[in-house]
Image (cartoon, rainbow, N blue to C red; front, side, top):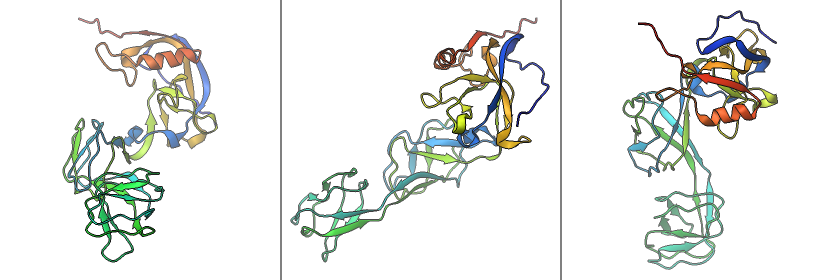
Length: 287
């Protein structure tokens, strides 16, 4: 249901009379990130691989601090049944197998069905692989033998506080390796709020809107007022759209640099959607 607010001019609007507005933007809150909560969460992304047993996890610069004790879930390895497609003699360093149904990390110990038959992987095996690279076998393994990699969740628990901007997190010894670009979502708390001036796309469920994401949700308009998840009508609340006008660019959310500007890609997307904005810089000229 539409909602109406009488608001003063947002500080980033240089000339309210220049603003071309539209109505009816409902929010796809399921696609609004944890960083928009009143107590923000964030996505933690590994910036390099971390092996099983590692106690330091390299990450892309943190948006917010991660306190000690935080548990991060970087996804799962599926269980894989390994079946040998040929024999491997004692001292062999590779084992022929049927194409794997999922990946198996380096360091995994596979216990095969024959007595005393086991193998330790010295390299990761990808989905579809037909051979395993292993430490020299203590005993031969027969064709048709099977072993189970049980899979599991790639968890990391912070054992020390990591400040905003940090590029590594000290963690308990990892039970399973974490790959480059694996991501974990740390949930925030409280309601989510999208600030006025945020660039929005319309790729959400049923045409609903959420903050711009490169490629998957290009910018189509600029949000005219704050949008709150705990509004009177929830997901049915609708918020005004700005489709053009004169805006003070350095006062928009997400503007960075000196002078502060929003990304040129966002301006290109807005123009492609038919928006006509003029961006100016706010300067305090008082003595």
